[in-house]
Length: 114
Length: 118
Image (cartoon, rainbow over all chains, first blue to last red; front, top):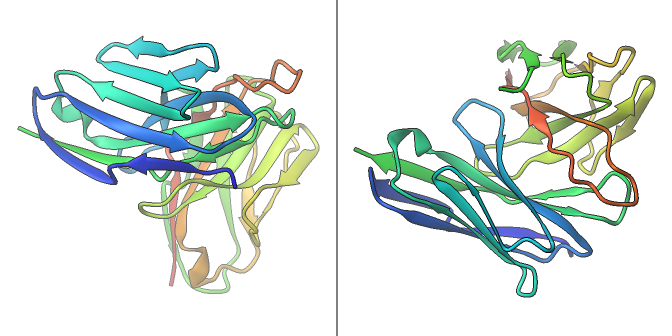
């Protein structure tokens, strides 16, 4: 069964600290993996996208890694800011159809305290 | 910032009412989607469209219907709302895929409509 599991479910850190969010998936065949940021009451916004051959991709203070062999991804946030408080969603796409079906994780709710 | 809009942002209605959630995008995207999201849960695809006059049901069974008469507009309708329809509804759009079974096109999401049915 194609699934995307994220951990932790929620995380609280102090402003300025680093953190790492995890994503494990069983989606096959694999096309790409995205990390989205969803602010409360808003729609998700894409942070990074990685295909099978990419191991690391950065977007400012966000760095995503992908290990396609173990089917794991992480999102590392450095020097956290209050505005980083949001839900971070891991989304995996298969290549089993032209639609490229998306499988969503439940997200990690990150709270950054001052 | 994605140019995709949803109205209303919040809606509280009584059981049995007919409602239409609006979604518009100005990016000229062919593909559009409707998702349902409950708090702390993953997004579930309920409808999608490849283009004008094309609509398909998604993975999650839904009593809602959609139409795609214009590229930029993808409204979702509930003929008779029930409390079980209470949820957040997110609209998204993306450019046409590259074909060959690969899908790297990013979906751009609207701000969502929070629906509460009493």
